Image (cartoon, rainbow, N blue to C red; front, side):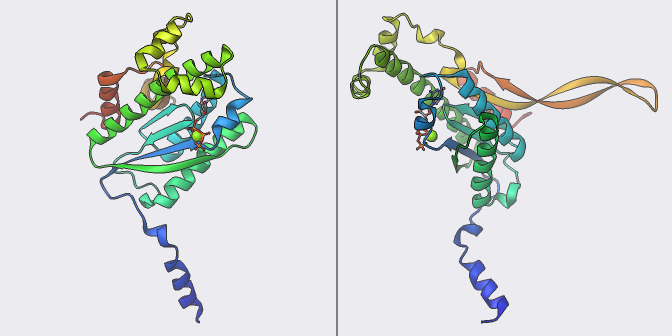
Length: 251
Ligand SMILES: Nc1nc2c(ncn2[C@@H]2O[C@H](COP(=O)(O)OP(=O)(O)OP(=O)(O)O)[C@@H](O)[C@H]2O)c(=O)[nH]1
Ligand SMILES: [Mg+2]
């Protein structure tokens, strides 16, 4: 077989290489820590540790920067990054998007933590802005659910229940009763820090920086971009409005 034939045949077996996110569709890349239940077990406070959250924010910052995303949202051990609808990053190739996003998150987290970790990655595709808003509402609802469960679980464990007993109790308890369970033990879930209940959002913001033009010798202002990290995100409709604005500013 001639070399160019071999080349063509081998390339044709790279089956998934041609898989791309359709033009005009919205894409969200979501990375998630691999086996982080085990990884966090002995290293971080439960149910929430600001040191762990800082590492996730560091990874989210790297993703937003490297992927040129519009908005990043992190809760628990996951990060979602919304790409611009017209983004042509890696030619919208799915293999590249998932592998590079997983590497970016892994490298940023591992460097900051000082030890190896792994992230997986997937691509979510939405056809309209409403889908995007629903997506981020869904992840925020997941944050709230996990936070309530985590607080209840570790409160019960702290009282001496086994993992099996605590899990079973929570399985049989409604949301209202979980709030009640905490309240009876001196924890008002509404007073738990917002970043734990609602997650953390990151986006680019513009600001004006005063300076001096040395040639014309006049004062000038330049517009710069910096990362905004929001640890007190709004909820429900207000959050939906925020996501809508960040996804399509000016629309
Ligand atoms: N101690 C501690 N654990 C945390 C914190 N934030 C998230 N986690 C843990 O991260 C884990 C994330 O859950 P999953 O992603 O569903 O589980 P996983 O073990 O990572 O499994 P895979 O994602 O399927 O590989 C949960 O067990 C959380 O308890 C934190 O602030 N402190
Ligand atoms: Mg995980």
